[in-house]
Image 1 (cartoon, rainbow, N blue to C red):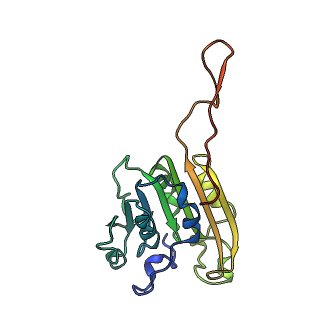
Image 2 (image 1 turned 180 degrees about the horizontal axis):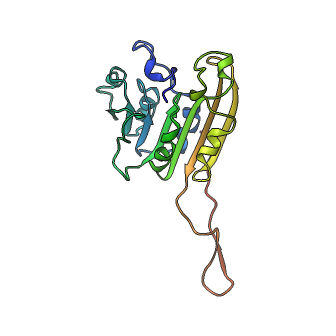
Image 3 (image 1 turned 180 degrees about the vertical axis):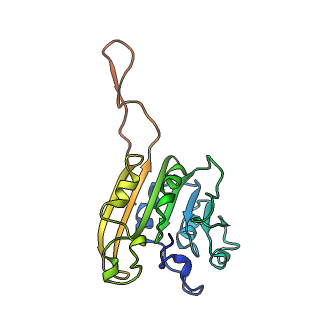
Length: 211
């Protein structure tokens, strides 16, 4: 379900800064590769990735919000009902990153994971239980249970960072957020090679924790 605090509800004259969490992990997204922002609203994160040289597809049901991105280089928009209609993208269409902030519709999670190309990064941040004590959203349907976002992403994705707690800024909120990677299938790190008993150790995948 769409949270009442979805970016799509922001006034047209009040375009927000990109999410700090998104900015923190954007360096993990392969340079120049396609990014999908789901429930983009006016595209605060879509614009950020487009400025970094990524082609971006922004999905939202709010036509007016999508219209604010008309003519923005590198951004394609698609009006769609993410909750009451079929998934709008063709089967097999994948992205180097899927970005979601301030939006929760649990049935979409398998679609979001499937939309990640091998090596693709999921960057997700939304509200959690406890937020009803400090503001909106307060409907439990829009609030993640403790550990829920982590459970939704594993074991399909490798978790690089996960947080579940309280933020005082930019406004008080209980938040869960995750950065996770759909790793390409590889053989066991120690594989038999050459002569009997010989082993080749593949280099460990590296995910820098600072941009």
